[in-house]
Image (cartoon, rainbow, N blue to C red; front, side, top):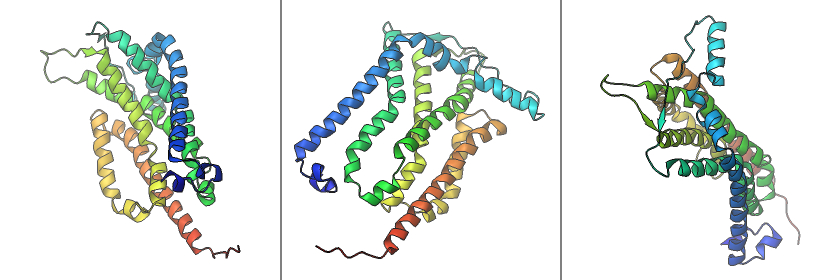
Length: 285
């Protein structure tokens, strides 16, 4: 199987099944080392990262709050977009809670920061399996995958996370219950939102490869555009307060992402059709 997979590379084609496994093992080991190295810095600067980054959306000085308020006044909307964060005092309910939080924070920081290198290792392993034309079509893949990942993280951190946290923290159904939150729950929610959107923003690239293997077509994406819009609207309604302006802030980038995916799929399909229409060149032995 591996011989066939790497048949396009002479050196790789001569490798046995176990040689390929050994090669894969070293790619994984190097990726893990990169995560550990970055995690060490995350472990050392845990307090600074927690106070200024992880707990950022709970501070009134968070950049998104300041910018949205300025935009609100600039376009004549008054304080419509101004957000006052809900005061939150976190609790730790486990004896080893803060110790484990420090390790989890360091590990996630390691994954996020080392992501471009991790993907480069992954790409280095599968690259020999690709043909020359496929390699030309995948130029800049490391940059674009990394760019989309960090774009998703930035979008979720500066827009989605503040709305979600303030909505959930301020949501009450009775005056007899006081909202109090465990620090672990907050960190888990932040991690899910940020990493989840970082992965979701890889949609155009995923669509590109799914189109290449014939699993998805632009026609399929256009046919189910209405369904996608409904899903995105529901998602925007769930993660933001019941306010049209706030929901549009979340809906618009997600919908644009879907439209970009259709365009990417169209270009990928056109490239495949152009290659099929190219005249075959007879090879002489």
